[in-house]
Image (cartoon, rainbow, N blue to C red; front, side, top):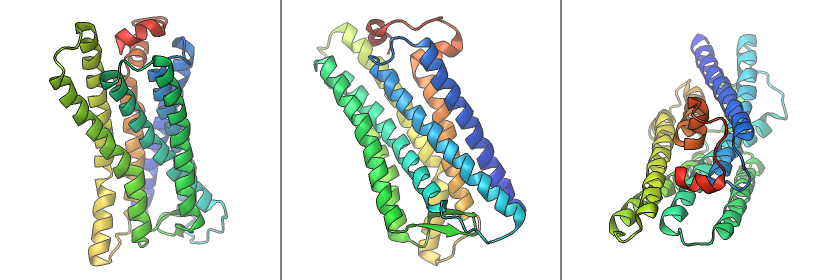
Amino acid sequence: MTIELFFNAIILALSSISFLISIFILIAIFIYIRPLLSNMAILLTCNSYISLVLGTLMMIIIYSYSIYYSLKSSDFYNDSLCPLRGYFLHVFICAFFYSCLLQAIFRLFRVAFYKLNSRKSHYLFLIGIFLTWFIAFLYILLHLLKHDFEYTSLAYGCWISFANVYGLFQALLVMYVGPNSTVCLIYAYIVRYSRRKTHIQPHQQKLNSRDLIILKRIVIIVLVAMGIGIATLITFLVYIITNYLVPTAYHLQGLSISGGFFMGSVGFAFITPQIKDIFLMKKQRIAPVIAVDVIL
């Protein structure tokens, strides 16, 4: 019980810190960065932070319940909203990693398809933001309708059970492996493209170099977030091989999620030059969107 409370306290603390950081950065963006709606790089970053705010808020709610029932030392948990909390948490996790994918695609367009009409690409990414959220809500809804979110007394919450090997594997494939592998492939393509294209104008080469650096940092954030979840993967593999589930399995899963959210909330603030400028107090107000293309 002491170990469970220790894990829950760490998860709750990480989630709370990530929530406050994400809220603060969103407020800073709305106050200092102008114009906002026409700045697609910042809009995509806001999209990531919105998924972080909602995801960390749901983690705070879930683990507040978990700590409460752990202190009560009771397995009784007659709460019809439990599966819904699990559903929304997985929606926001999915939306976060797909927001990272959108940022990678944005860098791909700026490097490899920079001749594309900016207005058309702007609309494409606005549609992309809507589609990623739609996919997240719709796909995770399938798990909810199949009753994959089951209550476990080990975590006093509703998760996709480790015993549901097919359901958990499918969720990991769509939520983590798919978008994150695509981000890495986009980075590899841009590196190869930049090395092959030697006739690009110096100004465009400078922009490509900056986009490549930012994309590299996005890849690092994604890989670190996935790396934190290695404990969950090992636990899952051990269960498949030995049919033994360690008592802290769901706590390790929660720790990996909260750790990934924390990395995202801190990391995106430092890989986005305009947000970084706010913290460094270099500018009282960010330059308009015409100058943004030079900065990013």
